Image 1 (spheres, helix red, strand yellow):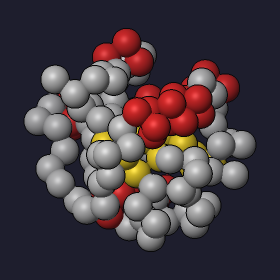
Image 2 (image 1 turned 180 degrees about the vertical axis):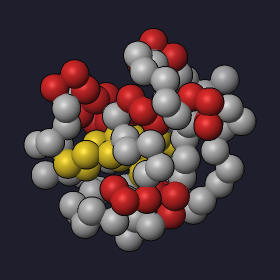
Image 3 (image 1 turned 90 degrees about the vertical axis):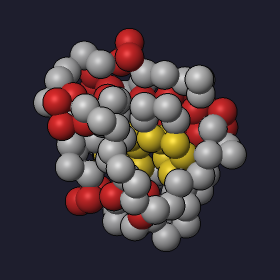
Length: 112
């Protein structure tokens, strides 16, 4: 089992979760974080750190976000050189985006 970052992270990118990861399993994209399922050791340290409750064990991801399991897998490979293991500033409008839903179309896969 690995942990999965889901839709609430889009356009927020709070990084408290990455700073507590003991194995540096987090990867950073332009407006989203993912967890590399092959690096994750299922320690659960990241879950309580996420202020938007975007992180779930892969067997508990809500049905509407199950495809984020594949998204985390794919983007962790794509962002292999973008390890993140410390806290940085969230995106400028993170607090405004934190409560919004249906943000998947805003997910940026490519660094600009």
